[in-house]
Length: 168
Image 1: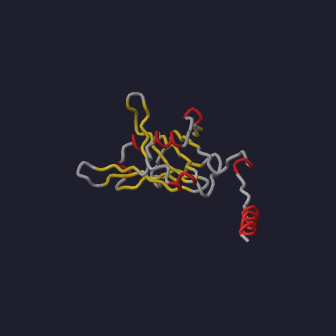
Image 2 (image 1 turned 90 degrees about the vertical axis):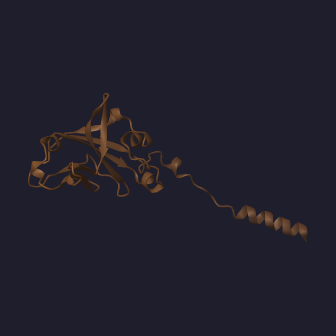
Image 3 (image 1 turned 90 degrees about the horizontal axis):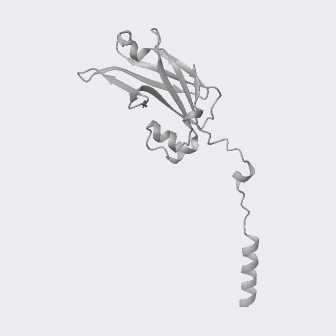
């Protein structure tokens, strides 16, 4: 009786094994983890709307996230990129203005909020440079991007800065 039970258990183990498929080997193009950076130069915030639309060169996936950075200056020859939203305060601690953004699959709208925006210096309204970083949904879902400093994000997403597409 023990031999029959052993044979039945062995046959059961063989027949109940499931097949596994490694999808990455079947599709060598990984469409869901493509990271890109687009740089927009000469961005001007004009009176009336104080907003600009940064149209993407191609649409992104619905699961993708977007981070927007503004070039705020240089230090020791290195660009300083500030993550948006970015807020500026008066000396007394009250809100002067801020940059903020919304995004869709096709573009990002960067806009200024604040009091009396027409008095904001041209240094902050004209000839701005922004970078839009496309973060695949996989990275956002897994919480991989805990630090959103520009250099860390670029490193984590394995982006070659020499291949950043510049859009005027």
